[in-house]
Length: 70
Image (cartoon, helix red, strand yellow):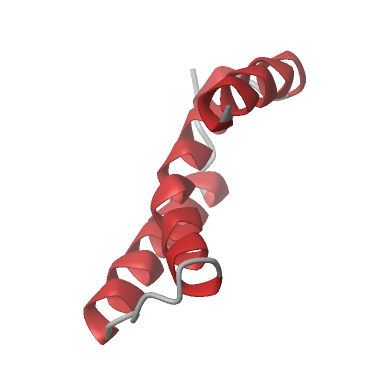
């Protein structure tokens, strides 16, 4: 059910956002997974998890701010 919802939302996003920008947001799955693990399953989040999530978000911000000249 989750994968079906994801597929539908992905297709809707591709209609609105260029592929080169939309694809960057797939990396946020790691961050969403951490949030789900913490809030739903009461998993312990380590400093390494937070550092990794921060690197993913930082990379996303860098890539979104770059201007691509074709």
